[in-house]
Length: 192
Image 1 (tube, helix red, strand yellow):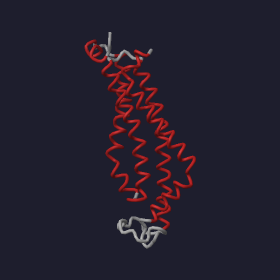
Image 2 (spheres, rainbow, N blue to C red):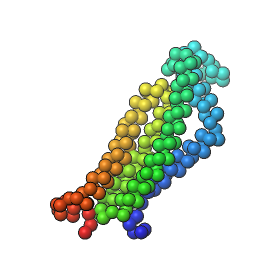
Image 3 (cartoon, rainbow, N blue to C red):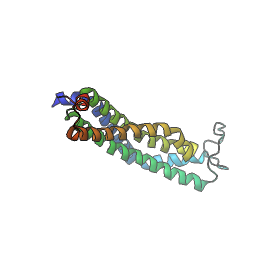
């Protein structure tokens, strides 16, 4: 069994790393929810027109006003908290699915190079996508929702593409292994 899993080791490790990070988020969010929400709102207030935040009266490094009033700042801070929770949820789900898919890949007759490639694709996708939500949630109180999402968009698209691309390739290769009549094509992807 361990010999089967060797080519997918990197994918499994990336899936486990994704779970560790997601569990760290869950623990932090559970213990410090109120503090995190307060910090997000405080940061949003620092970028609100006409609001002077206590302790930050002399700061001149915050010239960009992003929010027009306290109500908008509070709304964005609440949305930021939702994005942070999405990072945790996506990390948990995608980490488990990445590990499961890597184990499925390990027990196919695919050549080791394809097992390794698919497992790394899925593992990197699982790790990158939750980070996209975390980044957007963290920085939207500084830059606004659209600016934060625009900055992280390339990573989000890349990680989703890796993850879904790997999943679709696994599906297609499994179909190929069972229903394809072309032996040359089968020999290219699969061990005899």
